[in-house]
Length: 283
Image (cartoon, rainbow, N blue to C red):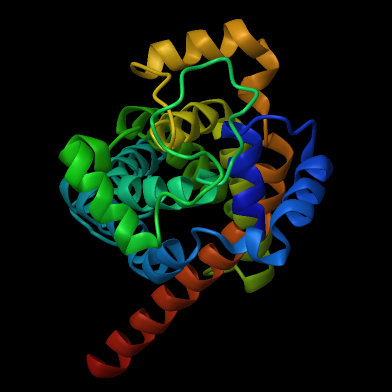
């Protein structure tokens, strides 16, 4: 949870030299509570979000197997995995964009803008604009409409569609590579390792567009700097150089490993349990 706050502050905030400096600054200014800002909404929705993404991926694979090979349980080819990953990426954006926006707005609303070379909105910097996730969602919806709730959706699409391809394809490859010959299915250790490697690869490569998405969604708490994805990229590059697009890459990769390991392990064990129940029900 605390990693998400540090990642957002590094990518969309100002005045943080590195990860350690960011952690110390947040703790010094906001105590331990600062590391848990904006996390109630994601925590409440993560189960639904993950279930939908993995469910769409699995069912798309089954549909492609039925259409292409006449057997829904046929081992998917690389193109099947890529197509299923792409569909999962598109679906994830529809669910994930509002959740990410609320999380980032809550995490960034106490960020100091006194050094920013921009014109502030007529609000008092340093005082919370939003009282909580529901208030944040309602306020953005009232002031900015549906477009405000889905602010950063284009950047999230550019992050998640290739990101999920680099999530599920490496997992499939590494899982097959690690699993011993002759095994019917991968063992939990193989799933855990393959899932972790896939998560690190996916989050590491998605970092540049994740930075853009975070900046677009944070934009609007106190100020409006960016007109869109391209403008955000150009302004960020002109003001901070190429290195800005790699802010948080280490923390993204480190976070991606254990999170994805747990996700894939739960996914595979759930599939095995459902298949076992079906076999017992229909002998």
